[in-house]
Length: 99
Image (cartoon, rainbow, N blue to C red):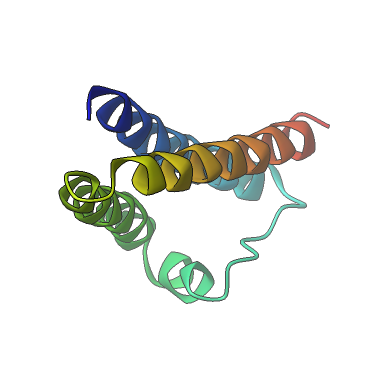
């Protein structure tokens, strides 16, 4: 359970970093939000974008943590996959943003 909590925090943190890098890249120019769900939110308001992004990552993490009591290994694997994926997305955003 402790490991899953750490992975949940990492996932939410990487989601926040992804949002920050996306906004930085858009402000710099040449970067666009590729997520078809997030793009309309970002066009409406940066606060709405931030709130939805962090809110959904947090809610999803909490739901997984609830399931981790019954399925600890499966939830840990899901969190590991999410952290690796978000880490890759953040790395991509960092490379594109700093070009």
